[in-house]
Image (cartoon, rainbow, N blue to C red; front, side, top):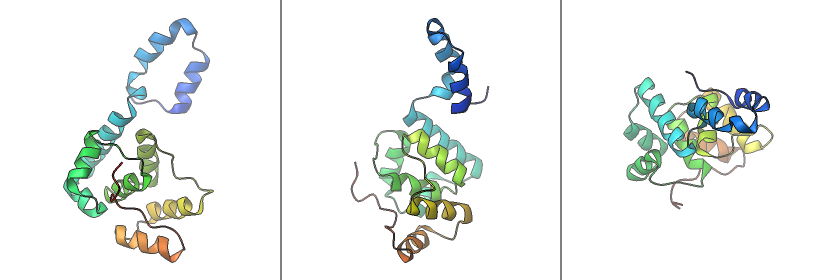
Length: 153
């Protein structure tokens, strides 16, 4: 059974009675996973499909390997969306996959009305180069580069 979208779940909820809440949860378990676990599983599955190692992702994301492994295992959490964006970019995720990863991690998706987010959306679509080149493009446009994991929260 495939994971249901938020819209599908919302439609089902619109027809669900309070007394059926338990069965709703049981029937939609896969779509309602714990955010942290869902993110980890989601990224790991993509890496397997793309034949990319976690080590390569952390290297390309310019994230300390040990910290990266802890993030993907769920042992550590970050409040820095830029760290997750670095991982997504280094893992060669599409914009759509990145939006989903952000959501699964419990972070705001990239938003087209925010200039920096809009530029990042274009960057994820066009894939102009490595993280250094991404940060260079952000700086050229007067925006903050993707932060590193210097401050681990």
